[in-house]
Image 1 (tube, rainbow, N blue to C red):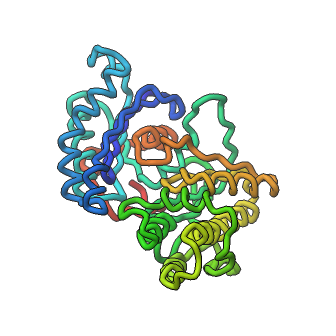
Image 2 (cartoon, rainbow, N blue to C red):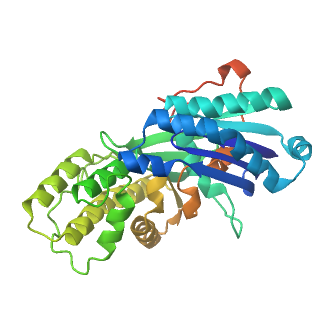
Image 3 (cartoon, one colour):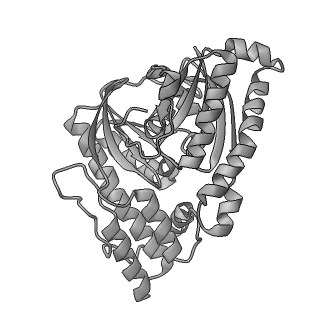
Length: 340
């Protein structure tokens, strides 16, 4: 089955065609990142306006990657998929309405997809040797807006294990980077680069590991962010040590609790997804520490960690449930356990 998916939950405009949920046939992503760098954050109205401008060219470019004949590609598409939430309402509407227009024009069914669940399915896309994913498995969705642990019993059958009670890990990364004076926009990657240059952590143990010792799988990062602010303002330690101590604090909590969850629910695999799954420190450390507990960790290729339509198509295939036309609506408030 070939599924054409559209993703417009934030500031990217993405389209992809994926076969049987695992084989990427074509993918195109357009971003308005440079505009948001100037304002220090995503401006929803600007993002939506650029997506209106981008969406048709992005779809056309995706189709042309498969064949110069639009009719030929159309006939090879079995269904459409689209992100319906969570995200920015204006941005989501662009993708939903584009998918509806194609559905009417092509006579194809539409599968709505929860963007958060989509992140998990980035691990099902094959780029090389076939992946053997065994249920049940634990999934960590870690991004700028979410930090959630999910137990996947099978496709379409999953339970919420725990999640952040306040700030997401990615948001805490970005705000701490701003406090360090690194950048005003998406500074988590810059913070991680700075931390990697630290040869000796002079601030070792100066930041808390929130909720690490509590007997649950929830997270809390607002206090860590406040503690980091106070540590930075004290001017007692070099910035590279502060960055490393912060990254180690987040890693201690997230990695320990994720592996603990996998062990409790007898999972042999952990699937990691979301923007922060691109963090090399997190990828390396969770893989090594889980292996010591005989648990395998799967992380997506770097380009499938950020917003794209490939994993939306994959999620649609493995959870194939087309909805009536009127039920395909944008819902910016979807939680990870909500049906799209």
